[in-house]
Length: 203
Length: 297
Image (cartoon, rainbow over all chains, first blue to last red; front, side, top):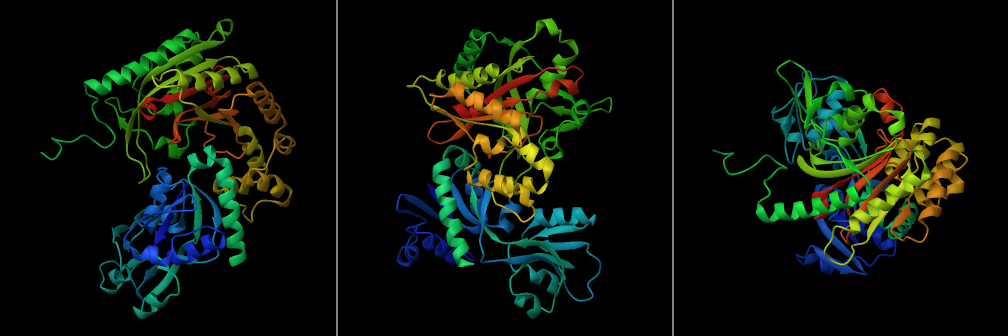
């Protein structure tokens, strides 16, 4: 079984919950090396960029993984999401400078989710895809609005922007590839049961 | 210049060696299907969109290449053989000729809307039995699908895994409460599932559900699956998977997927669609499957 772990924001807590579930996860010393694949306890752990977890799982290159709903939705990943984790919850928000003009241009790391959000509201706006520091777009008037994840709201406050609307409630999930789910039901059940229990205890 | 050295995403030519392999695989399938009493039909590569409009979900419709022809009609390139076969056959089916055993082969083109998949040209061979709603036919088609995976290989038999279910079970539960769909799709219990259904949905999600658990909700499906399970007993390639609720689109009953090799590649899928022909003007039960040959290579 191959499990994909997202590097970055969710990594530490994802590994924590897997350790609580009784899995022999790669140690901190392991992770300091530049290796990206670790064999531990009969499981192959792979470390990939958070947005790539849904890609690996969707295509069956990883059997399961941990991914934020933001990345799951953005990639239109069809994998099952059997466990929702109690940590790492945040919101995807529509953000703008105070007194911003009506929404005509919006910058985001999530063009697909943003497109759906705009379509649902019948708003016609241009989407400017960026890969980071999205708030800056509104500060520097690249766009009137931005759509981004908000955890504490600190970044938004520092830049004197205001949150206008919730686009989506985001939480990390265990995702399991459909083919893996259907062809290895025993392994899947065990994985889900263990992680579900660890997530329940953690909450 | 930029397009001189490449092809659109998802298509490529097969040169001599690959073509030879493709044709070998194809002829083994054709021999096996002809041997099992199936006759070939040829379907057009493009067709009007309108006759299928009520049938396919918007998401599926987006998977086909569409364009406006010179008369101003919306046309789609073939992306699914099954409804095309139903439309072609329905007007001319004579009840005394049933059941019909037919197969088809050719390319379909799917435009995957998702960023995860590319546009793809797929070579498919499919078979269908029209006008026979018996459990024996369900079993026969499942067995035929398994035999087709085993037969066309030079190497020692590659054992497939065939996972089957009945889509009417999930449909019955979803009809009682829409929230069940979300829970079954994510494989996670959600707050919207009404108390009366929590037990059965939880069991389906955890994989503990048995046929007797689902029988009160979908008695007919449970009885059929139980008969199928009994008929297939002893053949380890078949697995009943009650919680599998995917893409029910035109399927009405038995639904199955065929996986081959250690890589768990899905090579074929199929099921029963007893209402499809009626949509094109003639009642007839039907069951079929489609192999995607590239996935079997």
